Image (cartoon, rainbow, N blue to C red):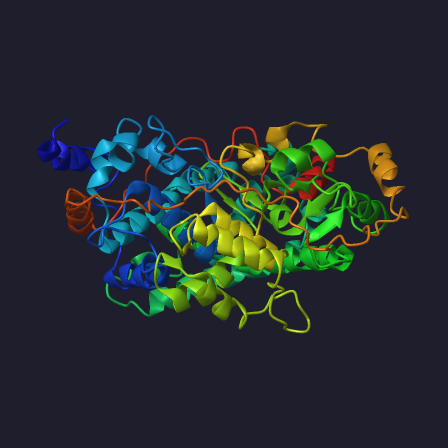
Length: 531
């Protein structure tokens, strides 16, 4: 296709999924997105202020993780993107199946994205995710025997959204879902933190009421008469997706605190024997099978002295600890490394930096897990590795590459996940049910066998450093295109289209919920299965 016809193709493809919807993207929200990505954008390599598709995928992944801890399927950093696979998000592939690769990763994407293009793209992607939730909401209406055209009272909305939460969090486990919804006592006593979830739902309904009260123009009769339409309920559901991780973060923090307590040497690692010992003695959460942990990419088997170890930061980000698994996204624990990397980006404001500049910034930072608020231990082998990265990259360190991410992992081992090579552990987003019943849980015998080694000595041989970089590898992979030489303005068509349309239709994006997965993390899925 000739480049002069690219705009027509964009309009045709986007017209299929974008139209005169009811949820308009206002200028204020576009400005919010822009402010959120600008610190990152300033450090991205570009040509004439435009970035390629690879870089935009990276920005999109980080934006959604920073804002809502949403891991958008298709934007996973572990995914290998080839000439035939653009790595477009699942929601895009479903919304524009015939055009997604061409529009977002094909040869024409080389014309580049400006910051405003990227803002518009992220806004459209947010709305596609929002619209994809309408199908599950319609299913919940049917469970209550209600038509989506029906106006609901506040009490009905509350009960319906509570049912939505059970469906959303349990995913495809319809047997347990229906059992809980039919037995209110069982739901109240067996669903994890149900009382708090009910309070959260109540808060989201009140938040929507408050927002509507601030926008009297266009007030619907349904709101004025304390009645709620399907669109009103959908708005509450959208707010839940965006804010649920903040509500659930205390669970992630409690889990991390337990793991940190087992990290005797501050390496961000817990011996598998201690992990399973705690799972047997105190906390049923730590029960993934060894094979599942390995396939998730959370096992460090490189130390001849420590034996098999669970990497805390990778474990917290693994699919077994993502509380929700939908067809288009996972809701996971907050990635604390994003805050640390953001601090570095704010100071550097460039795609690369010298080792001296980075060390100057890092020496004024501290780990959130360090009670003494001390800077990271950078002297010695870690500083040497930083210098080697610079030597292999023309004297400076690319901020958006695997080697610097690897450095950040060893500098902040409890916050920054170890960056495996793309494709090495592509199943790190594989949910427990997708991994297979009977495979994701360790047997009690296996756990006891590992736990029996807890008392074995793990003292290091003389001269061996506690922070030896056993897993360090020299292979670089750039998450952004540092040799970007693209220019042009074909993407102005998307910006103009988005501005003209101003909304996204409620798109049917297929069955909600991973066709192979459960909505709850491993330990909660197991609990739900028992229900």
